[in-house]
Image 1 (cartoon, one colour):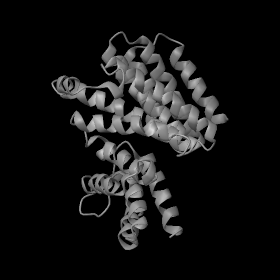
Image 2 (tube, one colour; image 1 turned 90 degrees about the vertical axis):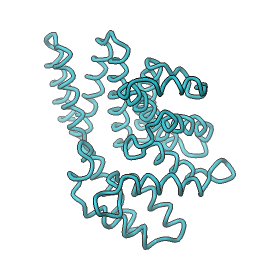
Image 3 (cartoon, rainbow, N blue to C red; image 1 turned 180 degrees about the vertical axis):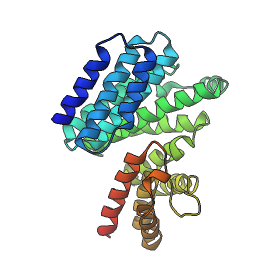
Length: 284
């Protein structure tokens, strides 16, 4: 409660004067950088959501507004991922989906299920920065959707899998497959692995996507990815396949890494992934 109050007071302080866009951006980034899987860290992420919301309201350019919406959606995703209450998870992931969908629409995609080959051909002609921002909006929408589905239960949210799959495939089609350490592949692989075969799961595709994600983002001289969730998801698949030794070595080596050295700016997520890896190893 104290941490939340401090965050609220900080927000009031920022809003007390006519903050410039640069001041709000700096405050929002600082708040997001302060996120962690603790009460103060979650309060900081909540502050980031609010500050990015202010920036969205102030922005007059659709591109700038899309950028702030993506960042707001990422902060909402963190709040959902770090929440202990399932209802809060669902609410935060829903908020993240709403923000990132607005960003996608600002950038020209009204519905991921209705993007033609001609549309893709036009998208790839855009500047690199424009394509990256669009890919970011798709990715953040997809991970919020995926975690929303997990919070609701696989069987209760299977009807969302086609949309999630299409969203991630679109990232690949516009040339951004390596965004967030093969985030689209990581998400596709996890989905194909977790969903029962009779309902659209596909072990061969899961193996292909997750192995590519890990091998395409290896830490220097190591057997594990710099992205902890690549390691967690691939290890889960390997264990299911009976390749326990490979899975254990990957996770064990990953848990010994300095989280500051793997993904700059994502130390909190790396530490959490290491914690989850330790728990997985304990249960094997």
